[in-house]
Amino acid sequence: MKYITWSARETSNLGRELAARLKGGEVVCLYGNLGSGKTTFISGVVNYFRPKTRVLSPTFIIVRHYRFDKAPVKNLFHADLYRLDNKSSIKSLGLVEYWSDPHSVFLMEWADKMAGQLPEKRIDISFRITGRDRREIIYGKTDK
Ligand SMILES: Nc1ncnc2c1ncn2[C@@H]1O[C@H](COP(=O)(O)OP(=O)(O)O)[C@@H](O)[C@H]1O
Ligand SMILES: [Mg+2]
Image (cartoon, rainbow, N blue to C red; front, side, top):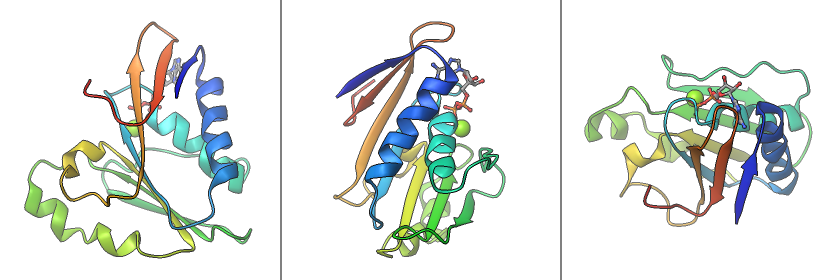
């Protein structure tokens, strides 16, 4: 499935649409260059569960945890692997433990840094900059 968005708002709305379908236990892997809209999309997901939440890329702390009262998703983990460059440091984060919980959703930017260690059952979303405000968002991983 391929979408074109023409503003950050449209991209975050796509995130909301995904959020509405989440039941807990999902691992969502986001791929794409800096500025392609990954964090914007995730802010849509978070704001579906908890409106008016400011979402920043967890670049330095690696994983951010949001807790919601609203069932069925109780926790959302937002990871950004951008700054990680060796496989063992990624492994030592123990991310795998986060994504075994059926009440949690795990979203990961730069998931390609963990290629080979990702769960087989996951949602892949690729982001591409195709104009100043235009982004191509593809469900299912592409090679680009
Ligand atoms: N269609 C669009 N979708 C998402 N972001 C857009 C779009 N058009 C412009 N932007 C801008 O591009 C930037 C995307 O940043 P961000 O979501 O942090 O990207 P990433 O997390 O992939 O590095 C933001 O400054 C946003 O306002
Ligand atoms: Mg980001």
